[in-house]
Image (cartoon, rainbow, N blue to C red; front, top):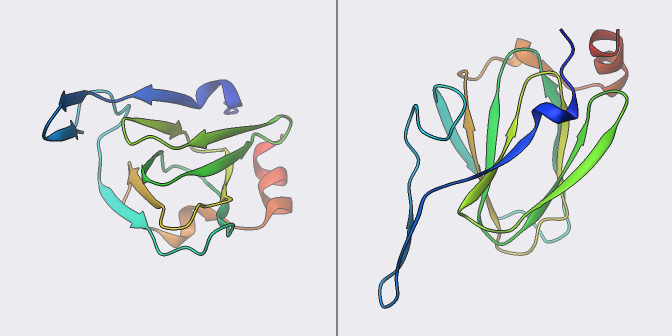
Amino acid sequence: MKTTLDSCVLINLPKFNERKKGNLTFIQNNSKIPFRIKRIFYLYDIPGGESRGAHAHKKCKQFLIATSGSFHVELDDGINKTNYELNNPDFGLFIPPGIWASEVNFSSGSTCLVLTSHIYDENDYIRNYNDYLKIFKN
């Protein structure tokens, strides 16, 4: 079954605000995140305006959060394209396997937190867009 952009969704995360103490947002398995978390990593110290990603996964699901600063996520299902701006740590973007994703236009000092459904496996990545189209467009 082909994955489409309709499967990519922004999800609000719980936010507790204490006026004098700041905010707290939490993430736990089986609550809000549509998969069991097996890996967590974050991207940081990315020069302003730079890009990351530009790949798709065969099996791995991802959830991206801008914990500080902002960046855009360009998504492509082989037919349609869309763009999300992530700029708030109390929501994230769910990206299922089969979607080509690029994180672009990072603001200076931004951090991207990534939660994944699988541990790292280089064989799960499709890093060439033409290969992606051959695999997922059909």
